[in-house]
Length: 412
Image (cartoon, rainbow, N blue to C red):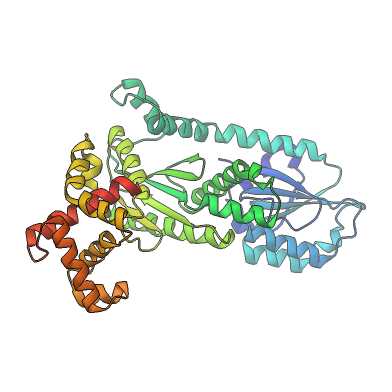
């Protein structure tokens, strides 16, 4: 990947001077972006190298400093000011601006207006494309492994993985960062903007994938990333518990960061189980996807759900023939569900709450806002319809299993 420091070697930028922000020279450059004036926050996604010339405009020092702040806040790779009589005046690139660049660790450069912007952008794009070819090849490989049939037993598959940096003696884990409420979010934006906003949904996904890729490469600098619609898939090495814990924390922090930057969004990370073989990494992807599919079934703490947390639901995912558990749940619950449908009652909900409250009748009545006698009457009706006793531990076990199975097949 190309960094801001690499730009200093480009022919069109040979006269470029670093004014401040040298601590950020290792920032990844994702694309050159020519701007006339701030603000920029709506148009950048992270990693852009800004080229600012403010042609035929009187630009004040305060505007330039505000641009530097915005660039840092939006994770831009750096800023290049074109200097000249009809561009940015060199006297405005004063000590205060240089100190601000140092404080925010964002590289700020200047170059005379004799340089052609087209030549600069062309050189930067070529550099990025040459440096990112291996990264793109890796994304294609993992996409094929996860979404297409790739034979992991083939030597050619292993050879390609090894070329891309895969280490058979390492342990890997797949994380999926997913935008959970896409429809709700875009409907809200449509109500604010216009009816054609939906057309930009794919553009938003691409911008989001670019931002996530840039931030993750900058913060972790390990593993691989694949953008897929409203989700970002990561394959990370997790060879030590401290390394795994650091990635767990980062992924949850990234969810919160995106939610803060795009108010109204909700992000969640699904985490698979660990493995070393390519087949196990593919399995980890499936596990992470299943974890995200199960968010309505179990309580989620923070911004991460792991396959390990699914407990009993893991067993249901692994059963090859779904008809058997479905029949089991139906044989236990159908009489109650049919009674509710015919009479408009809420006995199934009452039973679920009773089981969730660990068979505590006082807590169940409180949760459902029912009088104690009303609850007792409902529980007696449930026993009569199902022909069971709610005092029997075996009956309670079968009811809990049946409800979990029923929810699993109706909510995932």
